[in-house]
Length: 289
Image (cartoon, rainbow, N blue to C red; front, side, top):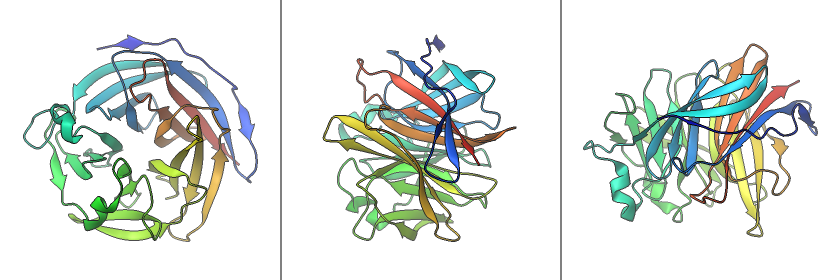
């Protein structure tokens, strides 16, 4: 299935100041479509030409990017398939219990695909590609300590192969970082909450081991505000690299970090929440010295 969209490109090569390193906006594509809704998790392949995403309606979305030089100019949706549960049935068939609320996405270095589900608060691994069945990972006891719709929101894999999952909102001690030890989740540490931002996306720089978090908050119920946060797990260094203006972007939820010949790129995608009056956005930044 293929859909082509007309891009809206804004503010190209716009530096965002405030730290020694800068995020430079490389392109923004906004599009409307009736065949995709609620994109929440995003992964981009090594050369940045293709992506895999999950929808919180229970669907896999595969697509490609078009660029003119550094500039993101267009997106094409190539395929849509239902996310399956452990019995080979679409998770979207269980909307009543929100089994379909896929939020976090990780394509691991061994080719396995991991998905975190919110509300239902589970993690599944797919070892036979997107057409295969899920294998559920045993829950951590605290997965059910979060309020409804504030559970497992993002996933990422560190360069050493360790799999992590992140909740949208903190517990009393802060945001627990769940690390998979074999087949058991443990809490690696807690990250402090800052300025009421929630974690909605995560990815590691596979060269440096830096953890990048996409955070967001809804300001007085009207405007989304987004932030990119970088955490060095080995040293505990934690800094905000960029914070958007209120209402500058829509509900950015998915984050993919990857390298091209010029350095580190961050690709973000927004969740339209199924609102046909709200377009989806893909936004790309480069991290520069």
